[in-house]
Length: 225
Image 1 (cartoon, rainbow, N blue to C red):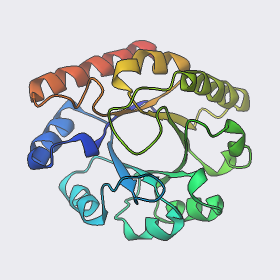
Image 2 (tube, one colour):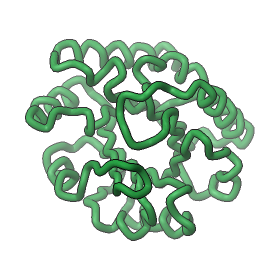
Image 3 (tube, rainbow, N blue to C red):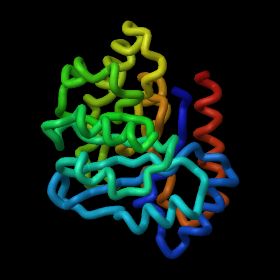
């Protein structure tokens, strides 16, 4: 899977949403990260169906859905998921991971799973043939502005090594949680898909600065290629 920069839409000022969408399209980000939270799996409520319908109609950029919900297989059909969108669901949130992934595939989207920091990589053993990506949380999910859990860097490295051993270059490693401050370290560890939120990215109202930051992260990706 190609390397991708993905702004976190929960960190975008909703009153300036159109301005940000225009900028993201202009500077060439790869997708828009959508945090969907149900108030049960995580103690927060975030981006709902109507918001996602607006985004799907307002931009051609792919949407990168992150379902932090219980029983995602019941909720995924509600959303305007398009062919080519990315969809991550937490293995901790369902007893029927295969059924949930099948719901993603039926939408024509890219099936992925997400893991909390304390969830071992061994839960992926029976899933590699069903997924195209793994979202590794580098903070406990639910809120922006947290500090990266240092041990998750080693987890990125271990997953990268496992995928290399299996010859699965088609499976991307996505990271979410204080990515901006740790971008270069995560890139070196083997991550390829980066959720950019309030950490050294969307902590500014200056769109010119935001464009410059995007260009900076793109240069790091190209230098690593």
